[in-house]
Amino acid sequence: MLSQSPHRRLNPLTGEWVLVSPHRTTRPWQGQQETAAPAAPSYDPSCYLCPGNARAGGILNPPYTSTYVFDNDFAALRAEDPSEPAHESALLHAVPERGICRVVCFSPDHSLTLSRMPPDAVLRVVETWTEQFVELSHTPFISSVQIFENRGGMMGASNPHPHCQIWASESLPNELGKEDRRQRDYFAGKNSCLLCDYLDLETQIRARLVFETDHFLALVPFWAVWPFETLILSRRHIASIDQLTAAERLSLAATLRRLTAIYDRVFDAPFPYTMGFHQRPTTGQQAPHWHFHAHFYPPLLRSATVRKFMVGFELLGSPQRDITPESAADCLRTLAREIP
Image (cartoon, rainbow, N blue to C red; front, side, top):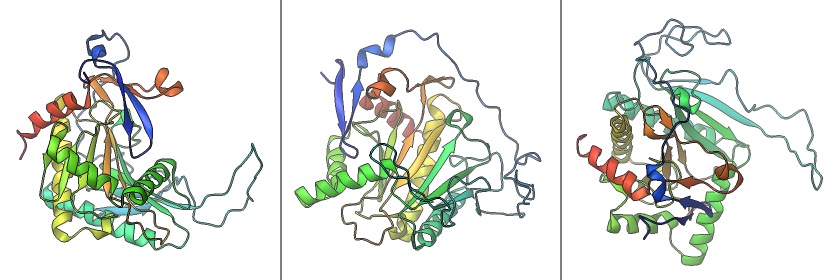
């Protein structure tokens, strides 16, 4: 029934519903098609992020040879105490927000992506994320450290050089706040972890599993919104990236490298996505309910140039998808057999 008829699925991490309409996969498409990005050179003299080049603000990048981290020149948040007071009323409510925004260049090679980087280079990225999380989480006013990557112009990446961003904020962002509340409530009601229990279910059912390692699972979540959305779950119950062992960091690097390589095989083209880690708030409170995981939200739907749009009913009502999570997982799982 769920593979043929319209139905709704609940996302237990957010409490929100997604409409699934499997019968719409045959509808014709005469809408917008994106232009595939050309291959990038190893070094681009006009790139703001390549080693030795000047960034948009005029600062010169060092001749870095591995990962490179710097404070975002056009940060969305600032660490200084706010100059404006809060504006609070029943209907007009605004409060100051502090934070720290950084950029992490994955590699000096302008042409590389996570899927094509050597394993030791991806491991260094994971280690850099860990170092940044530890440092920022110890900043007194920081409550959340959001590590995320926008890959491809389709996902709003302003520069094709392999990089990600880290936004550490004073308050919990909306999505993290939802997941914090839902996981906390589940733990309080059942005395167990929501994502541990979900992981156990998926390893038994296996219909949405893409691949697994000794330390991580890559799967299409039951409640996925985006056509080829995936979730990376740590097998061990940990709350944040700094709790990974050396073996788990190596496994996470391999998992990220393999999953992004699978994505690039779906339409035989570089696969755009937004990827980000969700982990415990950094408020200093105990978080036994939190389970470390990563979300991949790729927009491609039918080809390398046809994307999924969140418009109309999705903006005014609730998200909707055509292909089922199970069929998307089957596609990705088949491709996973080709990539060790």
